Length: 337
Image 1 (tube, helix red, strand yellow):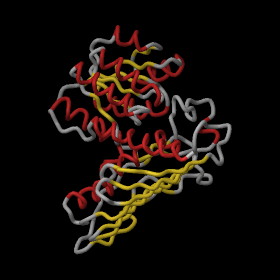
Image 2 (tube, rainbow, N blue to C red; image 1 turned 45 degrees about the vertical axis):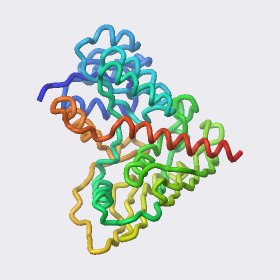
Image 3 (tube, rainbow, N blue to C red; image 1 turned 180 degrees about the vertical axis):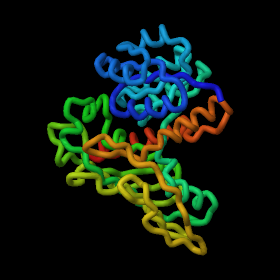
Image 4 (tube, helix red, strand yellow; image 1 turned 120 degrees about the horizontal axis):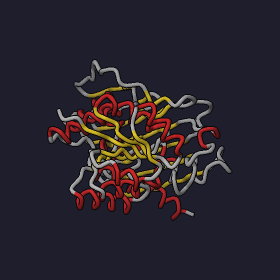
């Protein structure tokens, strides 16, 4: 397998996760952040160059194969397009962008430059998620009647302090930063959403964030299935639950735990899911945890695609659809006012 060289743009918390997995699979040659102290710290940890300006990075680092975009959500499209136009492959953190239009511009830049653009959808690798996806694809569950997605996490004032998180322009909203992976799983497993009606509110984060901390969504899928999404970052003190329950013709299943890491319930006609492998632990950021840490599998897939012409785990269309669905949810709130 050819050794791939990487750079990282954005040296915040998630960049640490990327750097860790890159160093085990390739060469981290450069990092970039407008905060020079953050860039220098990460660079010294991995023995690579650091930059405070993307223009300088793309001018000086011609041997890099892939650039990982770990900058704030609202900068993903701008940074990805700059790197693609400069001739680099790109892997972009979630969400792909803050609008379906910007996702489309990223896709066009990738096609024009003939470079790969990878969208990170790490929850697809969770063992119970993969198991339920298989029984759906094989038709074992039969017709899906309804689905309930619950996302009950804690994000306190300290999480948003001195950060781009909480800003409408750079963060985008709770569905983008906390729960876009969950929305992706709805699309991946159940299909596209035809219509939605949502209600949102900011109960515990007034003056802290510029958008909602809680939402309730009613959805009708194009398949005819009905669904609800209940989400909040007001779970007291710690994350409570990230779960997906499916009611279908031939069975009922629930994936639960704090971050869709456990098969909590199954009752399937003439079928039983057994011996699920142990999944990875969640991304741990000290006072709080995120989704299951499957970036190792994301990077393994990237290397397989680049070196062996393997199949990409999450297409650019999937990345765009996640953003499109979130936009549809938020637009339904605006239309209700």
